Amino acid sequence: PAMDCDYIVHVSSVDWPDEEERFEVVYEIYSIRHRHRIRVKTRVPEHDCYVDSLTDIWPGAEFMEREVFDMMGIRFNNHPDMRRILMPDDFPEGYPLRKDFPLQGKGWRDSFDFLNEGATS
Image (cartoon, rainbow, N blue to C red):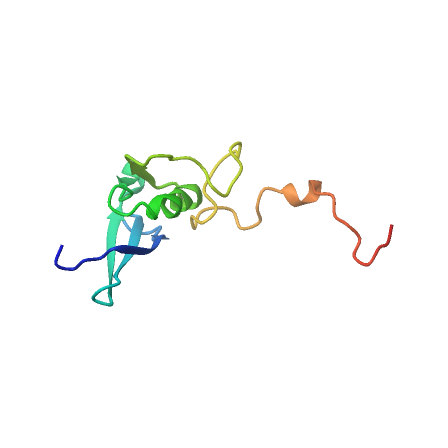
C-alpha cells in the first residue's frame, strides 16, 4: 500500500534457453500519485511453466498476460480468460516468441492469396 502502484504498465517475458529456469516474466507497475515505477521479474522453469495471474490486483493485466501465454506458452493461474489472443485458436504447435521456434515458419505464406500491387480492377 505504501508504494501505491495503481497502474500496470506492461507485462512481458524473456526466453533464456540455456538457463534452468528458462523463462522470465516481467511486470512493470507505476504509481500515478508518487510518480515512480517498479519492475518485478520472476523466473519460470520450462517444465512447470506458470505463475499466478495479477488480474485480481490490476485488471489491466488481463490482455497482457494472455499475450505472454499466446506467444511464449507461460500460463497464468486464476486468469479469468486464459486463451489465445493473437494467434488463431487452431494454431498447431509451439509459441512464436520462444527462441526455439523455427525462424523460417511453417510455410503458410505460400498458401496466401496476394493482391497485385498497382493492379486496377
